[in-house]
Amino acid sequence: MTDLLAIAKTLVAPGKGILAADESTVTANKRLALYGVEGTEENRRVGRDLFLNAPGIEEYLSGVILYSETLAQKGNDGVLFTKSLAARGIIPGIKVDEGTEPFPESPDELITRGVLGLCERLSGFHETYHTGFTKWRAVVRIEGDRLPTAQALVENAKRLATYARDVQEVAMVPIIEPEMLYEGNHSRVRAKQVLEATLKSVFDALADHSVDLSGVILKTAMVLSGHESGRMDTPEEVANDTIEVLMANVPASVPGIVFLSGGQSPDQATENLRAIAKAAKEKGAPWPLTFSYARALQEEALEAWAGKEENIPAARAAFLARLKKVSEALTA
Image 1 (cartoon, rainbow, N blue to C red):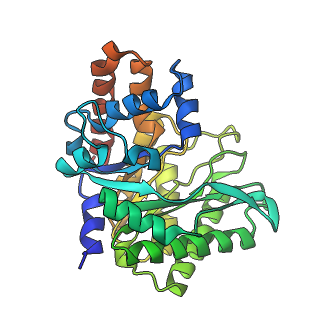
Image 2 (image 1 turned 90 degrees about the vertical axis):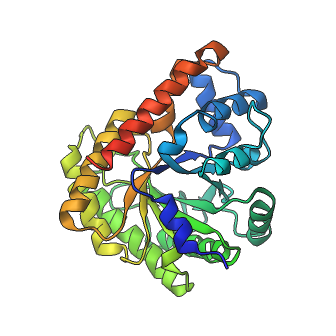
């Protein structure tokens, strides 16, 4: 019998975090284009090899969230990415939601697709590629007091809970990601209120669906003012509000919490994580905290690479340097 708690604890091991490399084809192509790289399948594969086969990442990464295209891809060494990761003690995971669509009852909000046929897809991923965990992302938009609506929060929470239950039934750990978007002009106070409401809906739904919380990891946003608000919160402000919300709404039985970067710069995401880790220690938070970043880990390396093979050593050095900084932020 698979020990989900053991897998979850491995994913939040001290000093290690999770690389979110689960960008869809469309998103991956857009990101490559920013650095002058054509969005072809081969370029996406080479870009993934840059990160996933970089020597030394096992010192800082416990897991990597992959996209379905990546599961069947091989590195430059001819080995499946999932196998090369597992050989270095890094658990391969898979994003299993199928993106978002407008919520009929509130068309300015989004709900996540992918519940239909989920069990079959999960079994295929686990049996064929030996994935150990999964991720499902819900999207929470803030617009004044109008959004999010209670109906959208409840519907997304139900889908997250259905997903989590199905994942546990095929012996994998679900990462539940109710992502509160940073876009908008909302205040940090409003963001705090929305995160509280979001987490309450999610954990109510998990209880209703009899999900084993000891085999679930929460991936959450930090409490930040909206990017268009003109306000730059200090790391201490972000940390105090974030930890306060988490301690009031996340059960102690959850084995770990990971943070998304959500468009923060690499330095901002690192410094905010450092302050959160410090505040969590001071306030006696009951769970390990770590990172599950995408762009905040990859941005500097992609800029250094720019699609040129001769730049790969420099790009990998930039990636390792950022991983080291983020890892050290957890224990500062």
